[in-house]
Length: 370
Ligand SMILES: *[C@@H]1O[C@H](CO)[C@@H](O)[C@H](O)[C@H]1NC(C)=O
Ligand SMILES: *[C@@H]1O[C@H](CO)[C@@H](O)[C@H](O)[C@H]1NC(C)=O
Ligand SMILES: *[C@@H]1O[C@H](CO)[C@@H](O)[C@H](O)[C@H]1NC(C)=O
Ligand SMILES: *[C@@H]1O[C@H](CO)[C@@H](O)[C@H](O)[C@H]1NC(C)=O
Ligand SMILES: *[C@@H]1O[C@H](CO)[C@@H](O)[C@H](O)[C@H]1NC(C)=O
Ligand SMILES: *[C@@H]1O[C@H](CO)[C@@H](O)[C@H](O)[C@H]1NC(C)=O
Ligand SMILES: *[C@@H]1O[C@H](CO)[C@@H](O)[C@H](O)[C@H]1NC(C)=O
Image (cartoon, rainbow, N blue to C red):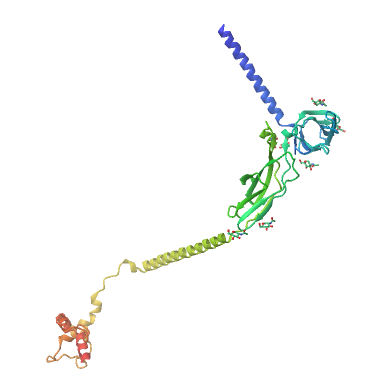
């Protein structure tokens, strides 16, 4: 028994799922074209678009909307107002036009019996009980005004058209970007004021700004989904004045850069010169170590000319010419030899090595000293 119940349930569930899947598919299939949709400024202007392939492109299509308004002072006596506009083709299957009710301002209680589309006199679509308050899309704000000084940037804007007196609170969104960026990269700043104050330094260079608006409804049971953001306002571009201190900073950093560059250049130059010198020295073999001096080079005349007589070799003049010929009886005073004689204390002179006392150089000094 329970088996049968389970099987029945399974079959029913499968059927249900199939139906759900099919209806979702069908809904998606129709989603491509949205039919008639209308937004309004909550004053008197309804903007409708109709997206449909039902009518041929040449068809003569209109939107008609009905309002009712109380006439005179007598409650209960209503007057029907029907406005219409001719749908103009936009792109592909989309057409649009604006229904404007000159004598009727929208309010919270306003309910329109219908808004419909007719082509060649045949009704194509019918929206009933349209409540303007549930489909608000305001006109975009006017061109933003930018006042950029050294200290701050003030962006201000005016409403694109006078908003409904029932819309007390408006929320604004500004998008700011560098000129070369795309709007996707822009920063978004929100405010309830009609201006925005940005301290200097936050924005640099060539910037662009645009604004949009959306009402905040305070009615009981009102829903934030009832209204939509307006289109974006026109764009204003401006160039930020750079603060003087920033100028100074930039100048400083430029100077620092230059100094750094010069230092780097000098270091590079030193390295280059060093490498060059090393190369040229290496090529001349000077760096392979100084060869030990060969003493025989310097002493070759000692034997060839002076016959090994070191004294003659050191003093190549002939003995007669020598002005210091040391007579054996010459009282050579060893006291006057080592240091300059007018300063040196005599006690230290005894320490002079005896080998120095007879070198020709010392004889020379002695003679000149006399
Ligand atoms: C109605 O609104 C549309 C934009 O939504 C605008 O282009 C048009 O000028 C408005 N018409 C009137 C009469 O305000
Ligand atoms: C509407 O009339 C035009 C000619 O006036 C015709 O070409 C078009 O097919 C008609 N469209 C419809 C939806 O009847
Ligand atoms: C217009 O229709 C074509 C084909 O149906 C589509 O590829 C194109 O994206 C549509 N253009 C717009 C702006 O919707
Ligand atoms: C559109 O819908 C409304 C409300 O259901 C109805 O009163 C009106 O007759 C319809 N219009 C047409 C042309 O069917
Ligand atoms: C910009 O601000 C200065 C000082 O606040 C003011 O004098 C000037 O009128 C403003 N300019 C504009 C275009 O708002
Ligand atoms: C900018 O700020 C400085 C100091 O805060 C002030 O002296 C100067 O007047 C301000 N300039 C402008 C244009 O507001
Ligand atoms: C707001 O506009 C977007 C884009 O046009 C649309 O997808 C969305 O349905 C709109 N919402 C309302 C509440 O009109």
